[in-house]
Image 1 (cartoon, rainbow, N blue to C red):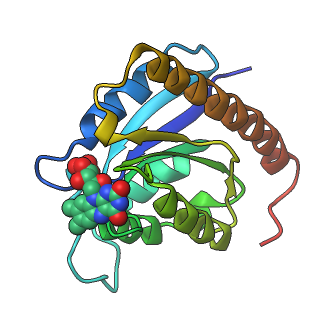
Image 2 (image 1 turned 30 degrees about the vertical axis):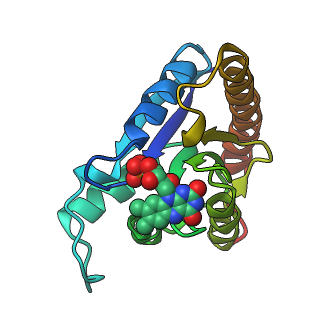
Length: 184
Ligand SMILES: Cc1cc2nc3c(=O)[nH]c(=O)nc-3n(C[C@H](O)[C@H](O)[C@H](O)COP(=O)(O)O)c2cc1C
């Protein structure tokens, strides 16, 4: 069976973002597995238009192409005012069919709430897009940085659980999509 194509989407486009460290750590966890082929989709690398255009621009086509090729997603998101960044919502909305019947997991970070409000809202968005969000998440507390040895082990365990769930759903939905067209 070929490895599941996992796209890790970097949600913060903020200059000087702290998210890079979280992304590097998580991608390293994911790349240790031989059941995953991991790519990184960094929203800061796309020259998205400020206004939603009537026709897709090359940047939008490129992003949508990446989403279409992936079989599973992990969104790495910070929390801004109890939600996720507008840059992430803008990008999510550029694709539609490409998200359908695929699993989505979350790695969030923030202060104290570790981005849980952001994840709750992202689940609502991905339900609207006919994606399947997996139950378990990884939450990184920026106030406990660097984490102690015990917290580091807990984070590695959380990443393992998230990736196990994502692989199960990813393979089940790969077979499902191949067997019959999605109903929508
Ligand atoms: C506008 C703004 C609002 C924020 N709101 C929250 C929040 O609601 N909850 C939280 O835990 N952290 C909040 N933070 C702290 C961010 O999680 C923290 O700055 C983090 O580094 C942002 O991710 P980034 O550096 O990768 O962009 C906020 C930061 C900004 C800039």
